[in-house]
Length: 249
Ligand SMILES: [Zn+2]
Image (cartoon, rainbow, N blue to C red; front, top):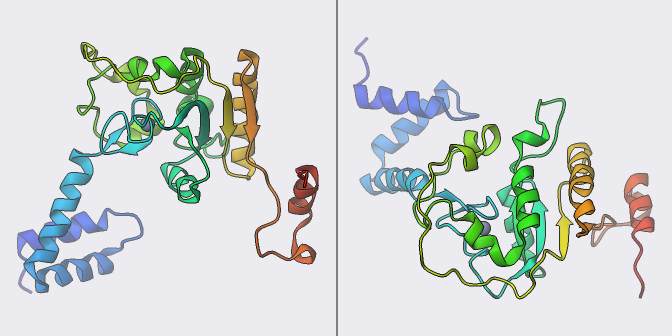
């Protein structure tokens, strides 16, 4: 049998390394690209290149962004005295879609999970503590251990396995004045929006113990009945949470 052309083999190998893609799917994708318009392959190649080259961690909130600080941290219309703590960047998008939140974020990149061997040190919890201690007005200055725009490229392993503040080379801070993102000099509220599951709850409890001694108000997203839901079909935990979190009308 004639061996495959090397570029085809290379692409099949590359696809095979992606999660959920077996050798058959990898071959199918490679042959699809081979047969389709050149534009499709070029668009994909450009998107892949830009994914690594132009994606950064925001030095303040640790969200994935195309600049540092990210558009939310850099927006002085946002209330930097309220920080919403989430597990993943997708959670930021979910809350942003509501249009109901005007504060800023802090992305932990995971949740405490003893089963999976994820402890507090694997998350951006130390950074959260430092951020709350620092206060919002000095947020931007404090985060600029590297000039905006040349932040460390996004690396998932870095998100959970090491602390970029330690590994990042020290670069002279830019002399330009950063905008003041809040009139308040202290963080007023920490809204913990970790997932309502075992890991999310453990993380929320840890955060409360970490931050409350600083005198900052720590709140948790309300848990209750889903809109359009039916009371009789709600599970006991959801219903008891909804009872405990009842609101004044
Ligand atoms: Zn940010």
